[in-house]
Image (cartoon, rainbow, N blue to C red; front, side, top):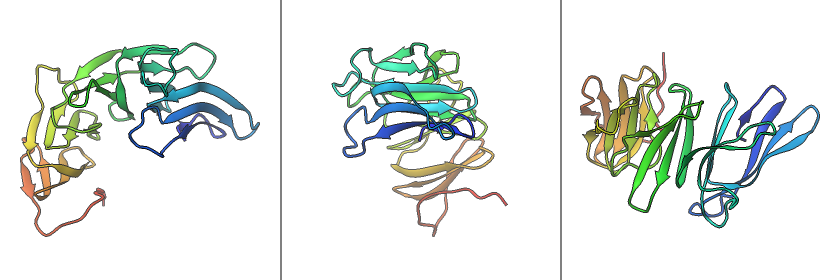
Length: 225
């Protein structure tokens, strides 16, 4: 399910999980009403990824040029209206991952230019798009801090950056080892993470990692008393 529109209405699409490497695994975006049993098509073709902001009811999808995708439109990011208007392209490019973050009030997408080169963009509800500094060696989408001010990038290391930082301000690398899992503290002042070298916490102001010995595990979750 993509998200709720009201107490009785929601957005639903179909996901093909048979092969995680094929693009455009989503298809047939529909608007369904539980009370009337009415079904209305929103996007009939395939797409790479989607993200939905329930408050503004903004739906953004990523479309690839792959043969499985909708070939009537160019690859890129599209705002898809819930009523009868035409989709509006927000950005061009090949985007593999997409998310909406409530704290930052932004969509964040990862562009795949080739196997080795990736970049990231932020998109606000009005369609304004700008580049985010994505470190080389980072995999997938960043972790947004609860205050919506910082991004933590994980992969072959751990990097921190301000969400408002431009490309001229490179991310700060705080760990060089491979990161398996990470989680922000509820205040955004610290980050717990597992790496190939152990279990650590990195906190403000400089986010220097401190080892926490004797605590192996996975599935990090912060609990507020």
